[in-house]
Length: 330
Image (cartoon, rainbow, N blue to C red):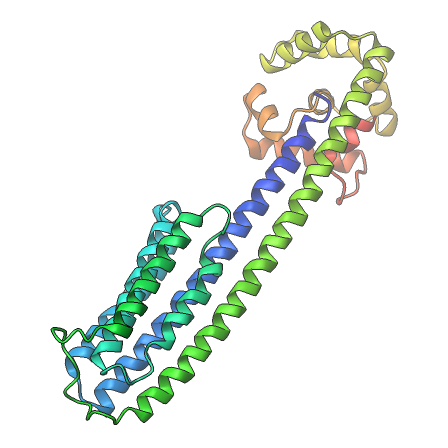
């Protein structure tokens, strides 16, 4: 079809925008994991230095490298993308139980419970309310159950810190409050950036969809106009396409019958074009892109691009203009 090249170009652009959004969103998640990495690293160092609790410090250090591992995994395998939401749910549940453990471990007096709210505020960043309502309800349910259980039950069977004297939690409580506030602000920042990405994706997709619709209308009009001028039928179009795709020696002769004014008009621009260059112009006129031309002429893509570059120079086509667009207008 006359504008098939442009349809492919715009469709590829839409796909590129989707991939760019996914890549940017994954980068945001990566930054969130980096924040968790630094947060847990700080607490592991703080606990070993000020309280000498080697067991808990080791536990936090190991957890720290879980976030680091997820960051590395994201860049190394495509499976991360496919299982991203499952991993995110796992991270949320892991964080909930870590918060619950330390809430009990510090005799419920160190302000660890504030991190439950940080987790709740992080939900809008990681999940889509319309598409992932079940995941959201599940995570919110886990957070709520842990919060209520830690509030009303003592859990005497669980270990508690022997490095804290009961009631001496002012420093740790202050740190926990400060970092829970920082986590809240980070959540707001990431949610805002995610909203900006989504808004940009919606606007770009609307623009490209509108362009595709306009090209479809233009294609229909031009096709009808060209068929009227050259008395072409759908059968004629299929015939010339088949000859081109099969690299038939009859293609160029048949093309000149169907488009009698095209070659003279090209030569009027530059009479020095050789036969192979005119042949390529004919293929571009029926909207064959570089890959298609390479296939039907048994050439490499690089060879086709070189030939098109020479044609561009001979026809004085501006560098900012697509060569197929120029050829189609002749």
